Structures are given as C-alpha cells and as structure tokens.
Length: 99
Image (cartoon, rainbow, N blue to C red; front, side, top):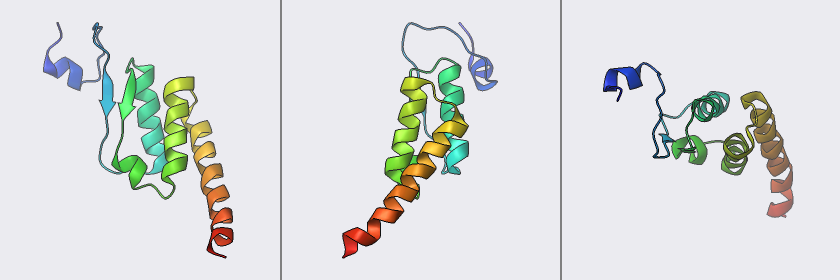
C-alpha cells in the first residue's frame, strides 16, 4: 500500500474503491478542465467541483464541458471550445430574455 508521500507525488495506485478528484481554488476555465481531464486519465472515477463551476462566467457551459471530459473523454481544448460556445450562445440569448 503506498504512503501519503507517494500519493502526493502524483503516483497512482489501484484500489477497489472509486476515487473522485475533489475541486481546488478557482482556476481559469481551461486550467480547471485540464485538471479534470488529467484526473480522469490517471484513473479518477469522476470529479467533484464547486467553485470552478459556480464561479465560472458560464456555469452551465462549464458543467457541460466537465461532463464531457468525465463521461466522454473529451480533451480539455475541445471541452473549452464547448464551454466558450455555450457561453456565447447564452450571451446572445440574454438580451431577448430582457425584452
């Protein structure tokens, strides 16, 4: 069984218990998406994000982008493009909602 130092060095190990990556401080959207992608690539069963979604300029877009990374294996750059597209689509729709 690896010790805490091995885990903190980024070494992965196998367990029968699913591991979920916990969130972090607020990061730029692409950095947060890259962190989620790397966690899943290294064996995490999922991610648990709060502020990187809710404090995003477009929480719906960020949630969708993270979902695509976790469930479909989408690359961070492609997920960021999805986030950006949703963000712009919502921005275009907002003036119509105000009328």
